[in-house]
Length: 202
View: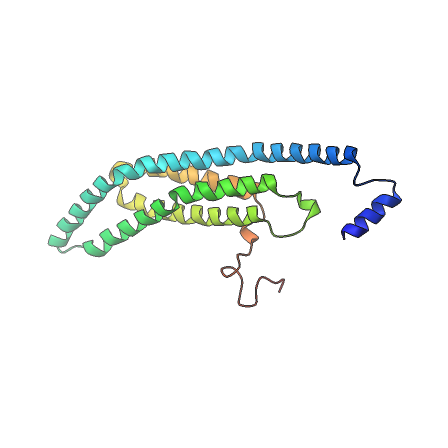
């Protein structure tokens, strides 16, 4: 393919090895990188803001969880519900939120940086690492939204509004990530999204 490009360029009188053309190419690449970095910075800032807000709220929830478990124990004495199972489910859901809290920011940072460093899409029609990182971040956002929604049911009295704010942040972050990386959802992860035969076209 490179030989074909060089041959066609030579026919048109273009020297691909000329210093002037190389300098022009470098300037174009740098301009593209800066534009990609600017477009991705808002996305990363949003992910960082969610992480900080979520971390602050999680610091308050252990006390609320203790109150909830006490209330569930009271219900148990009254013969209502299954307090052990419910309390365990709440703790498991909190673990999901904690697991993905920093994960989202890290994966979006990698996706944004990858988009800056990658070649322009029209030069290479291959799966992009940035789309793979963005897909993982989107999955983490999906699962975090589901987990926070479940927690909101249990902490409705005291923390419902704060959790709702986080859900709004996550939904906006999800939409921004999907807009920035429109091919991310279709990215095929080897061993996860592909069958035993690999990620072929069939």
